Length: 425
Image (cartoon, rainbow, N blue to C red):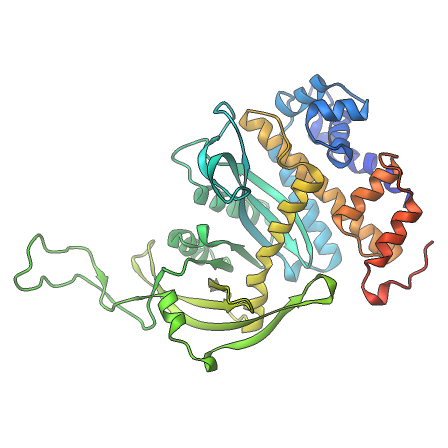
């Protein structure tokens, strides 16, 4: 386990060319910054410089603001290397790209992208910075791989940025994910869904319950003007059948229409189980102004929570669709671990470029942690959490007083029953 100390410099050396320009090599500063994300109590330049004693705050601040390295290149290499890891593990058949946003409260108005907007961290509209993120996920492994800071250009919406990330990962980097998933903020945009269908990209998109669907095929017709009606006659074609809201349709279902499914295993030996209903419905495709066949998936949890999704997964069974719908949980897990263990929200920068650079270093840190999890499992047959790897790294580098032996005993107590009898080596 003590080899983890030597694996961090080797890990950074793999990315040395990304931090090298014609006149300067800042890979050593990148190693210090990454080390600070893992070890320090707060992850900003001043605190990292004080606690690591390997650099000064001005040098670290210059690295994250003005230093000439490309954050987009770092994100792209992280994307490709995480995908290669999934290929080596044989997990690409379960791979998906998850789109979600993450907001951080911000005071003042001088930071890039700051405005009054909904902030998920606070659960309300407040002064904040919001970024649109893309995460690759397969099995229980997840890694943030792309990010775009929203609010910089008024004409570019979050949905535009989500579409850009999807196109960049799938078409630009040639990552062959099985499907894409996102929440109702993005799923409510029929143009985004229609574009994915046009490009033959499978997806599971949460949608709001007031969305209109048609249960039968409809035709687009210019409605005849009613006798005695005032005003101009409508010239635009409209569906000749009345639609219904998804919530109203769900309320009309009987008990026979639902199927109880075990979606996947959870931590602690629990199982994620819920009632599911699936049916093909029609939506209005805004790109063609015609009807579009799509699958509606409704999930009702044991606590009565109902979730609605549009699915474009040709040939997928109900259980497979249910499994894909539940995958969005892992991007929330990635955000939670990124904030708690790596300081995703603890940056102290103002510019758009420095925000992106900090996020690219967070992604690099997550890649290292994921690789360490695989190393521990393949060599020691021990299941590690992100927090476990961080604690081992802190213990080895003597940032905490807890010994490796004591920490390993604690980790072994959390293993699944068939793993707890493993002897320490």
